[in-house]
Length: 579
Image 1 (cartoon, rainbow, N blue to C red):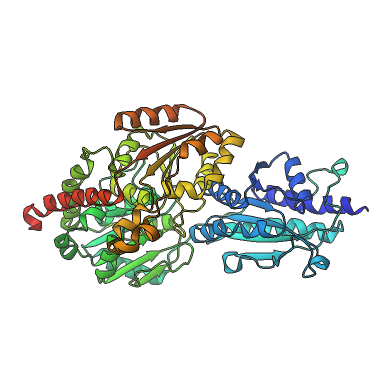
Image 2 (image 1 turned 180 degrees about the vertical axis):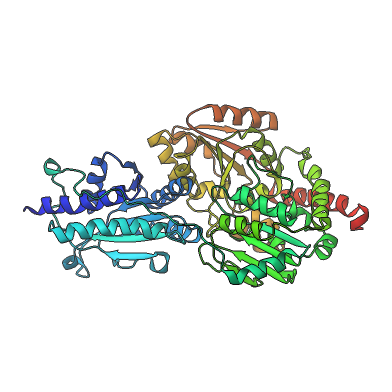
């Protein structure tokens, strides 16, 4: 059998294994050594291929598709530093538990470590950030090797999805010729049926049931929901909260603030409330039940750290150790929805005193109108969120950049009855690749809005090419304070001598020129009326639309935020119970 026919059968069998295990999307960065895999993927009738030239952007784009679809996405690149450019997105995927299958083409063994061009050491390139690494066998068309190729593909999908979801890296050494034989290509090479991966319902162990019954007797309890994206979780955790009488402190990325479920137990202004020293001191709970990653709110983390709760349960299906507070007392490794439903049944007869939860709800009612009130100055960054959310309808996705945007979303994105799904890269909290990730998400949602700062937007300008190539409609709100606004809230802002050069980092860029290069619409707004009009127009369009909001100088923005928080705290502490 000719070399290229063996190559074709071997790689086609592998691709068939991916497809029959549920892979639907592949992001390809062009290159020579990966030629046969790329061509065969283009030929497969069930695969949607996306071409993304910049490997860093490509990896984040794939990350976004996987986030939105909750399915593994394959990435393909050539040999050499192309694979190294995947690294930032792989780190993010690992920490945010997103399934990616990374396929790197490589020189054959005889061309390694001998000075051959475009050859680096790709063995276990991503280290601990890959759940499973395989150096694939050289292509052959024997029965055993075809079974091997198919099996590795199905196992790669299963491994990427198994708890905790993450990254699988398969390295393909390929010899020339690199062009597959399409004349002899036939799909459905194997007769295997589609591989189905299912997880059964998990049960609490008998040993934990007495613990949960004891916890249920405690009146001063909180449920804290950090970033978590699981269908049905909002309804399950709210049902548990209502049964226990515990308020739910819900990070916006928990997906609990939006939807048709009951909102009565949800506290969405906790970050402001806990800035009250009296409330912080007097409302320490005896019980904390935590779901998801750590919330963005720093003061909430401090509150949990200093609470000295008798019970702090961390519920995590992925068997992780997500406890930067170092105060967890019990780690329960079970599916989060299964936990909520089973604990609700265990404590179904509880009759609770709601005094503690009512105090939380009362504080929330006092603070919320202050945070809702519009600041008269157009340039206040918090008002970007308050105006933007009015335009978000059902099924619209909102992707949030790190640094200040996610914190303003935490403060100003309140509970609502719309089905709005929130996304962010909060695994490693970086600002690289945000635009590419958002564009990946946009392929799987009705409409997508991206809210970012100007430095984050700058970091991933290459990502805009995907919008141009595939006509991906996206509304990008760029909050432009000409630098790193988050640092103005941090202690280093007091080091005035070096602050602006090292942390403020103004870059004075005109983004209109960049957006024009990618055939997008650009508008720099000067009033909220203009902002509202432009957002509405962008959501009705089907193309890239960038809206820049020039904001107050960074130090003034800090003052405006703190004035608002102080006003809310003053109103809260002016009530009888918090004087």
